[in-house]
Length: 229
Image (tube, rainbow, N blue to C red; front, side, top):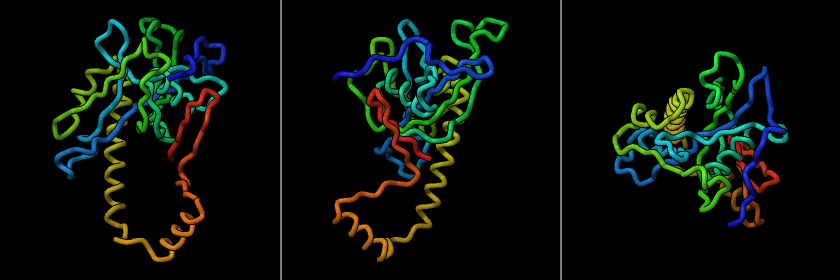
């Protein structure tokens, strides 16, 4: 499979308040074959992390946000380049973290400072080959116990700020699952007759409806990023 090489250099790098702007994501998927259907959402979460040569710890895909892309496109690009995955990116970030780059972590000044925007990415496609496959290896992190233990998941994270992002992600995904469950209880058993007729008319005309909260973004390097509000 052919793919465009990963972007290199910092000639397009964005900066703000003397900080390098970074975008990244926590790729995840929900297990469908869980024995207990009433289990919490976090017990069904698999999180994708990546490893680097000669290191036992793991990180999430992230990298520089460049001046010819949105922050969402940057996060999707990093997931594609470093982990070889595509998916549906949440519109709202999990948070914004300030940290020093790995080469400047022991410095006392602001040199090497970064501001990172992290998003949740629901993985819909895993590629067999990707741009930085020789540098990064994928690893799905899951837990067989009834609840995903933060201690067990956090120990894989190389950086403290990524542990914080993971904690925010797990809390957000649990709240989202609760809201979805409440909505399912409120929904009627069958759709209204007029809605069914409208759907049949659209189908017969060869049309398909798109959710209004989903924005499709296509980049020049063929990375298709779907941002969901």
